[in-house]
Image (cartoon, rainbow, N blue to C red; front, top):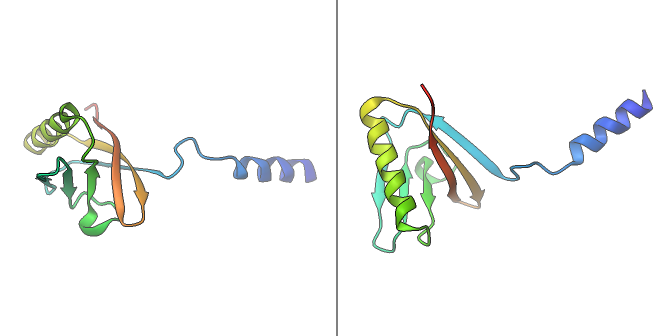
Amino acid sequence: MIKKFAFLAFIFTLPSVASGEELIEAAPATWRIQDYLDGGLTIFFAGSPCIHGSVALAPSAPAESKNRLWALIQTSQVTGRTVGIYYDVSGSTCTIRSFYAKEQ
């Protein structure tokens, strides 16, 4: 019994593979995309714990990533397809790490 407890205690102290990383998986029908002049792209009402449920690409993200995310959200809003977004939470900021369209 003690060995089993020690093993479980060890497992629960291991760092998570996705340390601090959260996931939103939803159809983005009510999400709002906002593009900022500094190069940032923010999605509001996505359901994150950040202000207005927002998640954002960093202003330093490549233009190609911003364009792909914009196209993915717009297409998914029209088709009803589910989108997945992995993001990190740091204070009141939720920064997008990766995103995908879920298979139907």
